[in-house]
Amino acid sequence: MATRYEGGCLCGAVRYVAEAEPVNQRVCHCRLCQRAIGAAFNARVLFRADDVSMTGPFATYNSSTDLKRGFCPTCGTTVFSARDSAGIMGITTGSLDDPGLFQPTTHFYTASKQAWLHLEDGLEQFEDRPPG
Ligand SMILES: [Zn+2]
Ligand SMILES: [Zn+2]
Image (cartoon, rainbow, N blue to C red; front, side, top):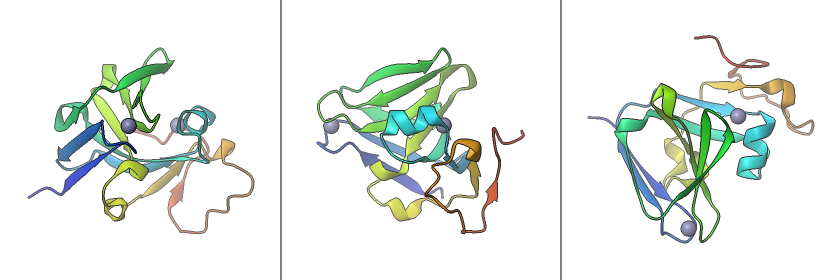
């Protein structure tokens, strides 16, 4: 049985559930994620978009033509990023009810990693997009 990933925004208006095997679990250090999340990096669990059930009045903003960011229009929490052309949706791990479910394997776009942050967790790293 797949793990149940459940969470939502700060005010509780936007909620999601995904009971599926994630596509991958990675931390993105690109500048677009940093700005969109308003934090040093975007730790996210990636799912097939079909596996995520998102409820509530979320809004989206396209940070690039092919990538939209989903957030709560009331409290502003960034809940997901989605690439419709690939059918994938990345859930922000800070929005998980149980952030301990996050099991990252990889850091990517480390070329734009914030300078104060030292990655000493032994996970694989890629300066830009991971292969595959
Ligand atoms: Zn909210
Ligand atoms: Zn990114």
